[in-house]
Image 1 (cartoon, rainbow, N blue to C red):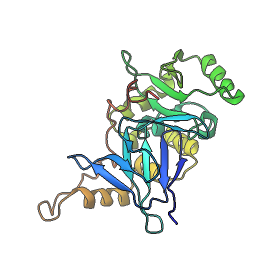
Image 2 (cartoon, rainbow, N blue to C red):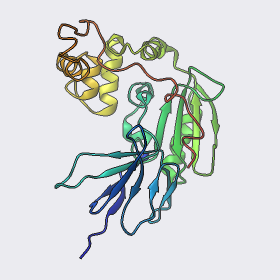
Image 3 (cartoon, one colour):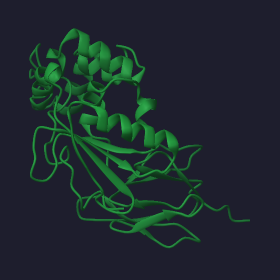
Image 4 (cartoon, rainbow, N blue to C red):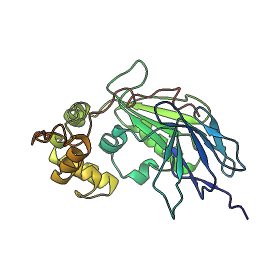
Length: 255
């Protein structure tokens, strides 16, 4: 008896496909997956809109990623987008924890800019009529740095804020990729927001972990050609934010 693939919501950005017997992929010239062919389902392809019927939740398929195998079978993720760096390091400028901001359930991403306006903090959400989300919206509009709200389409809502003055230096350091130079207090705040420790991937970035540095050197440096090349002792261990992906693009997030 054929076992059917299982499609489930992983988070606000990602749909997961597991139990993937007899799945085939079509890749482009760059090696990226462009189409996923799963028995008993229409092809999943880049540019297609997918609706999870049980909850009527729409997803735009902008990226298809194969993950590590589970019990010998690969699983795939259909993604609207990757989580922005701003969602990791800038959103904690707001009070509260991840759960307060529906980080996994409704938040699509945090951005550094929107079309026509740079150096802000913008939060894009899946719209929800539930009371707790309406309370969050009310609290947003009461913030002194709140600028405006927009409804890009029938499924999303965008909130735009000025950068809090007390966090401006940390914001500027983030733009330069100087994660380890953020203030000690703000580093603690980031870890608290995500409920992680210094040993986590976020903590290793903020505190410039030697172990992460060595791992990056082995991954990036070709020992055959650059045997003596190593990152400087003061090098950051995470890439600089890409302003293109850290800026809200209505076309990418059109659900």
